[in-house]
Length: 505
Image (cartoon, rainbow, N blue to C red; front, side, top):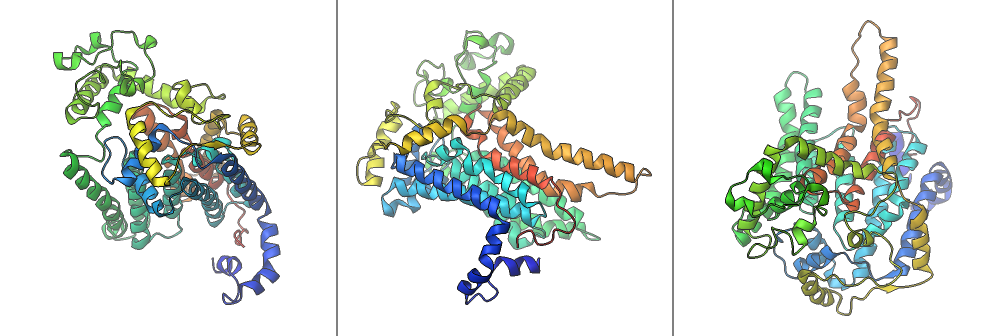
């Protein structure tokens, strides 16, 4: 490791120019493939910024801006991304916001590359792991949208890379907790990750505990849980003070209700009268996508008095969803697997509807403004943020270049599935080889040697794919944060040669 640090930094930190003259060329040659990928990624993001000015909008964008200008918890989305927008409000530029998001996307690639090399992986695997996040057209388009996913991806990948340090300390465990708390307050799908990482820290502490497992485990898990849960609890307190409701958002029951409407059969459920008003008499095969039960005015839930996310409505929807799952557990599991399977299709079928699907494509013309009332109100706040009009300018030929690029360069869902299968397949091959070498069943710490290498990234990637499928529905933008973690796990499953001690040099 000392050799790594010496080669990464100037020999004399007071004379970086001298170091650049003597060693920069050799360093660039050794990392040339990553630098090529990184440079192409930066160029594509520059073309995007020139082609679509100042930024691209999603229906959720307006709500985020409202919360940034008028800070208060939102009933549907946590305020983490809104606070990110507020940090940049002084510049009054959505162009700057998406530029920062593009920089975060590039930094995700850097974190992947450095982590693979620090864990002993080969340079070619490290560079290859960065290709999807740096060059995928849909990833770049997502970074240009005013939505929380890029910030969330940066935080989650940062947490995984931090957790994969060779030696974890109480300070690094606390830092890991803070990063995951920030991710949770950016997107609530981060909340289950706190439990996942707590279990991983527990296993790490037990494996290294020696004679005093309790103390070794506590010195990592306690600072982690305190750092992770205190900010979340503080936000929950703010939410309760605002709405007199417990939680981070007030829409969990509504979204789970929408999820269960893909299969819920009231003739099987036999709901009481107060829940029966939420039934849909149509057979499941004739019903619309789950999100229509949240936003469509014809939804049984939306037709109830008051706004959709009142405490009473959300509680009612949650009770209906709970009854549906208890009454039809196999149908719920089948529906969850169906939604998960959409992540791994070879093509890119339109889903959940053409309007939502269209937001993930680089547009040829200026997109129309959303018709929902919150978006109409949000436009006024967005103009205050920008201090000017927020019309999107589609500038050719740059926009056309990105549209043509998006038609060709993307990661198919089937390729993502193959990437996710690489680590366990590599582990199985190595385990079989070891069994042949040690037929008498000699001890082999496969968990420390393999699971610790790629298990954190692999488990996190699957969690990011499974939670939306179980609690809401599939959405293409929900898949993208899992991609860099899947690539990281696959790259780490490729063992470097035993002589490769200077991978970062």
